[in-house]
Image (cartoon, rainbow, N blue to C red; front, side, top):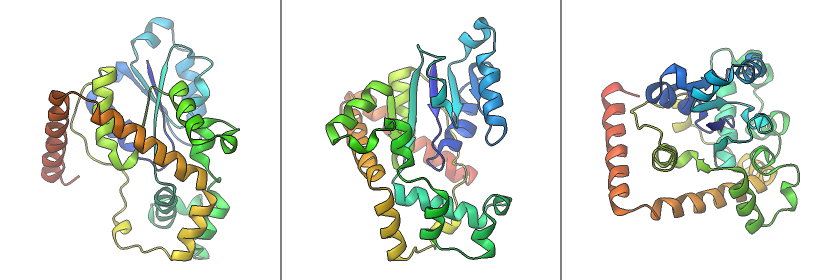
Length: 250
């Protein structure tokens, strides 16, 4: 069993709601809801009869890392993102997504800045806390690499999300499927964050930036280590996604 821990704003919705629903029948996937339903969905999954639970190949959602103790044989996977881009994505979601004003009313009412939003709503180095544990600040780069290898079967990064899906096919046997991207904000193309805000965000998430760089290096090493025929299939898969998205406008 694979357990995908969805770090917010890292393309996890695309993984859960687009890729998994296209690749696996409902009997083989368990998608955790967000918000108030998340804890309930985790409890429902853990309460399933053993036979039914054993048929599920992938559990995916926010807070999935909390199930490690109950699922000692599972292989955990996740995706991280450049921390500045992750905060910007959250900020634009708060500004423009329908219904987001109920969660972050001051973003629209007061017009708070990116840096103010980050300070109020985004825990510093959130990705590192989840992936590495509470002692993340004390870890050197080689210790981060070792910790990731101990805790995760695969860690991808948002900027190479489709390659992440392909590596899951190669290493874990998950089917390939065409899928569209979810929650990609068109406003990002025109939004230019103030340099001072970007610097403030970068300073607040310095460990996440290091984590992201390490994940990127380790991930690209795995891509380069693929046999030539696998790299060719990867390129064919990426090409098929481009065609699918162009035709479906996703």
